[in-house]
Length: 608
Image (cartoon, rainbow, N blue to C red):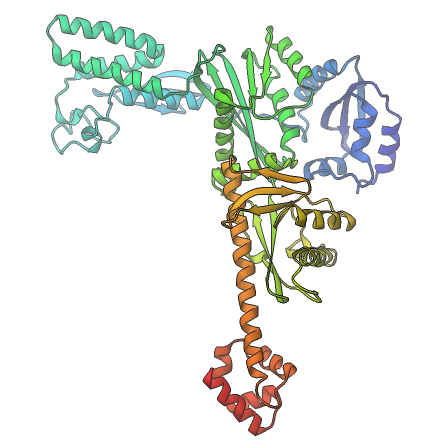
């Protein structure tokens, strides 16, 4: 708790209702956060409100605020412009700061009789270099395309030293290499191919095709049909690559596509840059300590374009942002031309946002040790259910019963998209007047949340609250459990997992209806996996309980052994195998029965 909270609350209440910018400062007077507000007093008071439920990053910031300052502006637009300027000036710790750590990249042409073309991060004094370029993506793409089109060797052989010393490698046989190792190309011929490859990198596919076509026609007129055939093959290779590249076919050829993904306390944003209708660059930004993807998206866009001179006429986003008109006006003023901000729902543009989103998910997967599919599934599930963030910690429940007795429940936990088996729990339902799934589910959740109150200091097991609760059942289960959770003072989102008549996942249930999920492949796969796992876990516990009950009932057939003594025996020996391995004396001692009863017990156990 911030020891200055009362002072900060009082000062915030006295603020104006005008728009403006606020600057949070620590004990030393250093600015640690800059924000804008449409109504200053409302926004700043929200930070210091008693019982406010901030995410971890905001909570840490509030704990470190010693004082704050503010600047009143005439409009929210002026506040946005000023906010961007002050963030540049102060680089506050708790704002999103996009560090330019890309450095420079080069295309390297080795200085040897038969040169190789590759990507490089540093120059040397021996080889030839093209660049510098700021994008590693565009350099890598250009090098890969040139090597593929012109069939340049990628092996480690040295030429001409290694001519005809070994058979051509697989790349030659699958037509990915011209086979320099066979010694069929002179140094001058190879140098001409390298020149053509570098021209292709410098001028692009259209100009290269035009030049190669001219050379092919000249070779054909000179009756050099072998050379003409080689040039024809290169032209076809360039055309094939152009067909497989991501090309925008709409009217707007220049645009940025922005999408984000989140994994608990980390987010990633990817910007795909299309220029001239062709994907020319990809920029990736990973943001640690980010719990609110929607809020981060707003802030990321302003940080990314602040001072950016290359702003296209179209910016496409994966999700809507707050103050869309304000952002449009600000981007247009920076760019010097009108900028359209689009959030497509279908068609080619939607596919582009999904492409960017998948790239963001893959970037996160590298950081958190999860597959891109798992990260994407959690992110997609959050959007589908309207959650503020991806559900990092999910609990799922299923009831299993055999008639009116032996009613049990299973709880499974998925953390970061994967089963956390150490946190699985079993429940034996108590005092149930019949097989009532709704009452059973209510009892289970009541017991679970009561245990949280007892164990919350541990932060583990029952002492940890989930980001999402999934129930195996429909809206009736949700309507039963959701009010209970609210009454107990919790705000955990609850949804049901609905099956079809073939016991396969069909939809997500709310207290008011259903949400179809089959079209959302990543989320559908994850929910199906969770539902199958909780059902398996509950059923396995039910079978174990039923087997134990049947065994216990069998023991009570012996005169002198009632229910209590049967339970004592099962508790002492745990399994049937252990019971069968026990000696006569061990059975007599555990059950506390006379020798004759013990002998009857021993004979029964051995016959089972």
